[in-house]
Image (tube, rainbow, N blue to C red):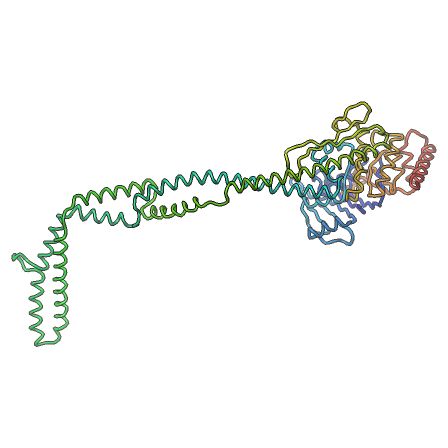
Amino acid sequence: MLTSLKIDNFTLIDQLELSLKPGLNVLTGETGAGKSIILDAIDTVLGGKASGRLVRTGERKALIEAIFQAPAPVAEWLTANDIPLNGDGVRCSRELTTGRGSVRSRSWLNDVVVKKNQLEELRRLLVEITAQGQTVQLGSLDAQRDWLDGFAGSQQLQQRQVVAQAYTAAINAKQALDRRRRAEQQRQQQLDLFEYHAQDLSSANLEDPDELDHLKQEHQRLSHSVELQKQSYDAYQILYESDGSFDSCSDLLGRVEQLLSSMQRFDEQVTPMLDLVSDALAQVEEAGRQINTYGENLETDPVRLADVEARMSYLKQLCRKYGRDLPELIEYYQEIQVALDALNGDGQSIEVLESTHEQGQATLNAECLKLTKLRKKAAKRLESQLVEELKPLAMERVKFKAELRATTPQSHGADEVEFLFSPNPGEPLKPLTETASGGEMSRFLLAFKACFTKVDPIGTLIFDEIDVGVSGRVAQTIAEKLYQLSQHRQVLCVTHQPLVAAMADAHFHVDKQVVTDGKKKASERTVVRVTDLDATARREELAQLAGGRSHQEGIAFAESLLAQAATIREN
């Protein structure tokens, strides 16, 4: 229940504090007096669309604060969202700040900053605003399906959750199957590529990353074998065996060794030098022997040279083909061997995933069928109850049907729900928004809300001029219906009907006043004022609403309305 509303600098309201009561609260006043601004403020503080035009001209900030009692569902929601309770209530605040052609909005619940989507969630537990112009929402098939489920109660809502879970599972299974099929197609393509590469590289016998370097060295040796033989022979002659035209290095070192040996007999200091020469002689002799062996083993091998050149050409061609050098190519070959093992050993089979998807779809269809059965029962109850609610509203022979049509299973089930309406005998059932007149729509909305009083957790119902276009007995019936609703919920109603206003538990008059702007001398501003009417002022207001009578007649009529309302209350 909305207990108080505080508004600062919101459109034409400079400052306003309004205390609302349980039961039926009515707002009356001339057309354009600002009654809808009060409702706009309630809508805005609970997450409605914000714009710069909502901030009073000449001001930078607007502030709205609404305090609601917090019944169990609201208290549970606050706890779930880590918002502390404020006694037994919840204080909703919203600040709008203009600047640079835009508006910035901040919202709080019990002094905790919250996001817009949180406000929208809470709004569904606190307030519902109904207006005669609500034809867009009434024409929404999604909204009609949601209303039917809400009317049915907890069992149907729980089944709808089961359907939503089954739908999610079926979708996940379908996506997993699609991914696996795509992966299988990609796997086969990758497998074909890797098998081709593996076969290509396997025949190359790639093992040594340095094979090309070794082949290059061997190629150099084979292609210069004659020169190497001659040069090794010359080196051997110089080091070890001369042909007689000169002394070899070993001959010269041998003579030096003999001289130093002779010198050693007279001077021991020569010994280290003798050791060096002896070592050098031994190394020269060994080098000569190895060079001789190397030269003797060298031989020209045109066949081997051709093989080396062919192998080098083949390896270079492979490296160019795969865009890798030889060590990288060997590494790639090892990688595709591992990849082939993984691709040939696969994950979950397509057959298993197909079975899971089929089971998920079957479960979804079964749960949707259960939900459809529940909806059909709820539709019958809604049809019967709504017609009964409409009969006292001068619609004794109205027909109403909540029609279900099968659709593809979705998270909300496999039904499309449409409300069909026929206000006049002999007329076929048609979609509600195509059939009902303005007055009929007013009565339909009121009866519709009456059907939800036992299942809807919302504590405050707001009706914005839904009694427009009706009068006499129908207006009286609407007044009584609003009063009946107010016994179960707080009702806030904007009305021009004296019959409705007379039934109120609290009556507020809204009007525009021209006042002097304190910020600008000799400047006038229009402001909206709201007055909580006492008994005397209320009679005056009802007399004004009745119109077309002298003042005395109007007062007498107002008193008769109040007396009639008292009688209805007693009964």
